[in-house]
Length: 91
Image (cartoon, rainbow, N blue to C red):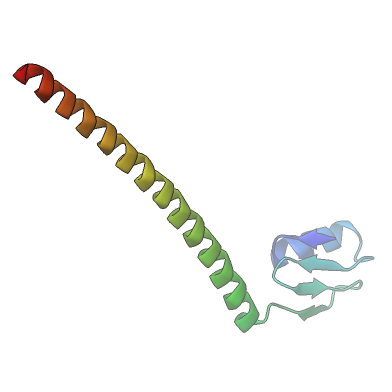
């Protein structure tokens, strides 16, 4: 079984009469019988969270680049329209 955190793992273990091993997302293990082992290695979890943050920042950067391209295209269209209007007023 997998639990979100250690408290949830304890509750699940009790519901299952401590017959099964329950593992938390961060690596703690509530063994059959109720003993606890493991836990997240802070260095590894730090790397994982930094990787997730980097992935999120890269996605934000891609989204901003797309938005920038759309704004540049819109700006060019508006400049052309303005030039056409000015030209038509002069004629």
